[in-house]
Length: 219
Image (cartoon, rainbow, N blue to C red):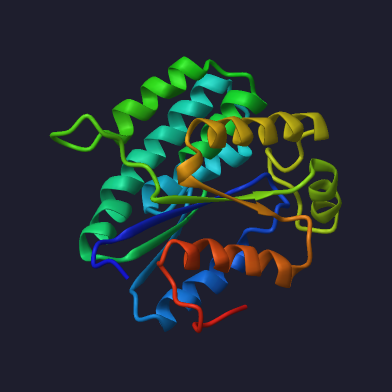
């Protein structure tokens, strides 16, 4: 394992089945002796959690939605993600900027150039021309119709989970576009399989990069 921190994001439409595998991966890294920071977006700090409640439940136009997402992200980066990476933690984050492009950009049809500018402002690394991006993005890819069936028996849906299947088709296309633009950063997981088969793909993505051995914890 490298001594530096690792920043891992997890993406996918609602109902893709990320949560179980994020927890299992955290256990695997801890078993390998790594400190783990588990967090989520929008959220992860007191301020960002307040903004999360607004975004998920209050009606607003797409620009307000995008600005709140990036405001929450800025606080999250400053207060949680960057300090954890400096400590050498493995940061496991449930959603990051790819979700904003997929949901607000492709799902809502919001201007992608505006999102790119916000991304540059919020994620700029001081003293460089680089942006803070995940070292790896694990994309749980599942047909929207399957995700909708999974959500039907879940909790009361929030403002995003209650969207139409057509909306989620656009979101899935947004994720595919983000992966095409940065293929080395992504590990696509076929999430339309059994839990064990999905976990095997997740685990393998980290083993292939040398970030986990082949005899650690598993789901």
